[in-house]
Length: 344
Image (cartoon, rainbow, N blue to C red; front, side, top):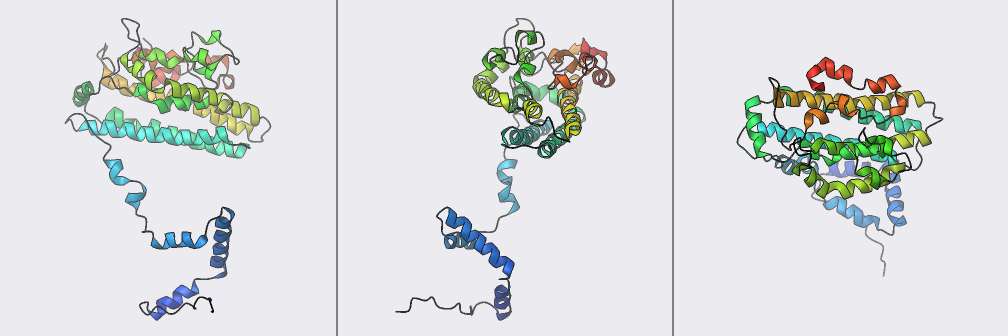
């Protein structure tokens, strides 16, 4: 019996012109792609025909399905009826998505097996582009909400706080040696060989969620530590030899792009540790500090001491800056944009 499959017949339901057009698409380039696909699936023990059937039966993709638009737009759930709370929650969700993009780039730098200056520089430029956008977007917070509405709906958010953004902490861990995240008053207790577990208890951000009167951890901090401490500690250990500073120092010493990379790292340091914090504190001063009266943040954080870069002197890459630049860290920006009351 002849098992040769019958030759393709003309589909009587398909107009002759369309059938001819379909036959004409089998150019050498299309045939090449088919052979490449056949080889791809054969290498993993798969049948090309089955995958072609899947492509044939699959529905066309739509924009709203691809970005899960309905789900995305259902995630804004204000807790009050004040209209401006929608702005507040949406803005913070957008910020977290940009944090995700930053981490996406930093992760590629840290885990790339063979990295060169070109790859490193391009990823770092992307990171700085995202951070600049975040800084510029803060005018939505500073000028885009009614003061009285904010003071009311914020009371429904207790004790939640932007302080609890784990992605922000992850960016810091990916950026620098963990010793540089230790609070300034404890830095001299550790060196590059110190164990991450020892330094973790003195990380600078914990000072930002201490009750002013009692000196005890706020509920905001205790919630954050319960949920994220184990994850952040694990990441810090993984990033010991994979953070941005370590990769640059150990693997890019002889790259011809060295000066450009150094400049972008300095840009990142200022953008993230000075300009972003300054944009944040401008918003805090507008809504939480009027007529010399300071209103507590939703999480009870001591934001006037925690946010200003002049207080924290948080620097990712200290050896890229002169002693004078480190001592004056952030003062120019704070005095220019906020005024001296930020330093009180």
